[in-house]
Image (cartoon, rainbow, N blue to C red; front, side):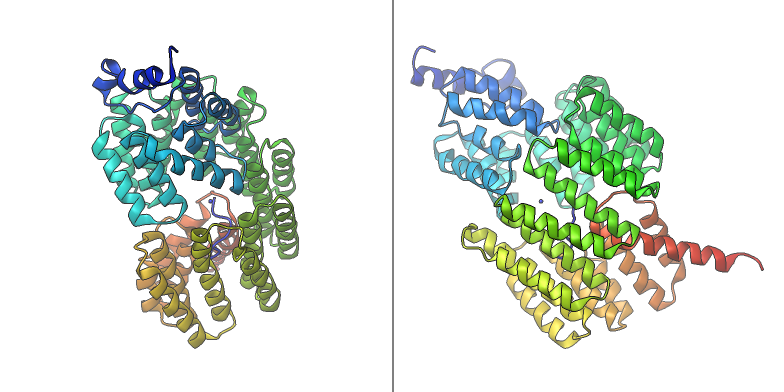
Amino acid sequence: MRNSRWFIHSTGPLCALLLLLLSPTGALAQKGEMSFTTKSSEALKLFHEGRDKLENVEGPAAAPLFDRAIQADPDFAMVYLFRAQSGGGFQVFRQNLAKAVDLSAKASPGEREWILFAQAQADNNAAQAKAHLDKLLTLFPNDKRVNLLAGNYYRGQSNEQMAIQAFTKATQLDKNYAAAYNQLGYSRSAQGDYKKAETAFQDYIRLRPNSPNPYDSYAELLLKLGRYDESIAQYRKALEKDPAFGGSLAGIGNNYIFKRDYEKARQSYQEQFDRAPNLNQKIGAMNLMIASYVHEGKTADAVQTAERLAKFAEEQKQIQPAAGAHSTAAFILLEAGKFEEAAKHLAEADRLRDDPSLPERVRENNRIGKMSNHAYLLMAQGKFDEARVQLEELSKFISTRNNPLEQRRHNELMGMLELKQGNHAKALEHFAKADPEDPYVWYYTAQAYEGKGDKQNAKMLYRRIADWNQNDTGYAVVRPRAVANLEEDAKASKPR
């Protein structure tokens, strides 16, 4: 979820160890699946159970299994990685990731590449992440989970075609591998192939009929298609399977957003917050509350909620989410033309992002968010020359990092600068190289088309935005504007 736009989610230890490393000479070796380095069969069993839950989005249920596996074998590198990814906030993530990295030298080559890939992803080092992923795929081209990992990586890069290839291969390696059908459904949906997406999600339900996430995923597709009541029914099925499955409460709330019943939406988000078993879900629920007020046009309420989130996160020692909440408040205020208030929130975000307790690489990554934030503030204030200098400095900083996502964000900002200066053709050039899956980018691309007099392309983008139905703060800003443009156009085209 992208809530903050610029702103920049046995008989003996040795015998047991050798047994667990070398035993896959049968079925597992034939499938080419990775084995894991642990001296404890109990730890391995708990790891497998937790992994099954985690890859089916049951992080709160997975976390205690990984904790028990760590107790059974404190030297089991991969279990720390999976514990990092199963929730608990920024500190829990970083501490467990660091432990996995420390132990990776004692793990197998495949485990080491997987852990170092995850570290590079967390550090926003795209080049290293891709290098480790490529090595992992070379080592285990026929491991379904490695292919799932690759698919998720490509999805994060907005390369849905490569993602589909990886997810499809995972299903071919194991036709009963449920998690791959889930991700395949999302990639098909992102490509607009809703029929195949629905088939994939229905396969997911068939393979895991007693789990909540298959119903939740299918409900998300129905939401996207505007089939709101059907979507709510599927989300309720997910909650029948697991009343603590907070994501479904978020989904129900999102349906009410697009039904324009904002109070009901917030009731659902509040219920998600109250039930949430970990900080990640509580923070997610509050971000959706912020977006609900933006959808409704209540800027002051949105900012007040962001301030409450910042205070809550800081009290919980969640520095990055606290900084993100201030950045979100600044973004909302800038879009509303309230520059002085926005600047105050940016100063708070900067203070938190420079916190010395954060790892050095995180603080370095935070520089990009800070520079982006201030460039946009300068643009909003009409200080275009100063904004251009800031963006040139940002370009130099990211040029050595070889990160496509950072380059897309820079192009987005350059497009905004050119648009604000009336350079519509140059704005379109930059927007074409920004995030292709972001409705916020689509909206300002439509504005650039309108500036050029191309109302047809602008209208197509406004319609695409209006029908996107995926909730976050950036979308909450532009969807009402796109809908208003369509309604105005419809009125103008009616015969008098």
